[in-house]
Image (cartoon, rainbow, N blue to C red; front, side, top):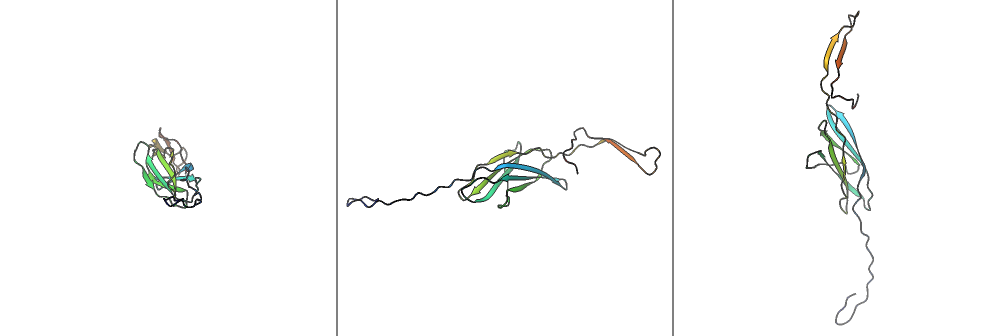
Length: 154
């Protein structure tokens, strides 16, 4: 109410206004490595956070472990996935994701990826010889590289 030297006005009832919060952290960030024409990509997925308001978009950033600056990736705003393209072989990447609504940005959820695929070394002791008693076949033998483990078979 207003008050002056003439007197006091009437009280005015005020209704409360609901306040909204920024979105909570996304959860369950997962990685799937894909290889196409020798190029490794990390497909990143996450679960939608809780929010009082409609999520407008997601912000995704990544960096190679040991690097201080982040690189942004712009996912489709209607999906909860994106792809980090052309990552280095045998490296570990840090990825962070957050949701954005009209109230503001939620907190980053940081996750470290597994090591990306590595190129195996060269095989050694390559030998080509005809098996005994056969003229129309060849036998090929080799020793697998010492740093090689099966990470994915095609």
